[in-house]
Image (cartoon, rainbow, N blue to C red):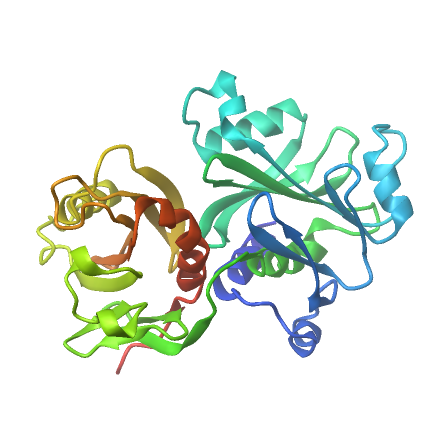
Amino acid sequence: MRRLLMVMLFALLTLSALPMTSFAQDQKLGWDLQSDTHVDVTDLGFRFYYPKGWVLDTKKGITLGQTQADIDAANDGDDSTQAAGMTIGISGFPIAGLTDLGDDPSLDDIVDFAVKANKIIELSRTEAPVMTRRSLSVIGTNKAARAGFATFWKQGEYAVIVTLGLPDTVSVDEMGYTWGVTLASIAPLDAQPLGDGMLTADESHFTVSYPDGWTLDPQNPRTVYEHADEVGTNIQAITGGVFNMIDNTLSKLGLKDDATLDDLVAVVATAVTLGDNPKQEEFLLLGQPAVTVSGELAKNSPGEGRGVIFTVAIVDGHGIILSLVTPSPEAITDYMPTWIQMLRSLTPIKAAE
């Protein structure tokens, strides 16, 4: 089981793009993923790539199966009839509806509640990024003794669950890597395409790509503007997005060496003059816990009337701060898919000898 968790985690941490058929064959995936075999979950804003040759059914939510008979057996509400093949279910529900868990339940609280409510016999669970958001995958059997995976993550006001049910002839050990690759291929809808341009963090050894057509500021080589004619313009005059990257030791950021992620969030919130009632979500960046915050810049601040999204992480004693100023607070929703896509592009690079 430990080996299963390691290969699943490896798949989620290292694969952020849809694998090609040849790659799938080399890695002996349990199914074939293709760029033209997907379902757009528009209510939740992401695209899910599913195995070639499978059947898609949307009569009761989103269910995928090796055959229509498998889907019918999975959705008939009768535990005595089980699918002969594998099935996948995709669903989401408002977190506010989980009134027994309080106003802002954690992902762990939601997973614990779901495991108990659905009488899942949990063998283990693992943590990894899905669209860079922190997710938890529970590995176990349901009340009908059907083995599989249930992967949960929080996305704005919703909790999302994607499940893989397995027949007796297929073990979780066989499908761990395949499930990890499938989850890693999930992509946000309506993101601006990324171009060839990228920023390099020499200190923490990673690169991040930015959207096609955005322009690097030659005077500030870690700042990129959406509109070329606004490069170097005061924030009060911008009409597009502005991306910035900071990678510095904690001490240079005014923090102690043992500073926490919450400490770093507080420093950034003060520096950008974040306004009231920001949203905060758990992410994973370069294999480390991260936090993404979004909200309105404070009134009477230089950025008044603009919105901001920033993601922070602490990696090997360095504070990584990625930020995006948006033309308005309302524009945050429009830019968030692009932000997710940028975070998905983060790629570790080998440190110089």
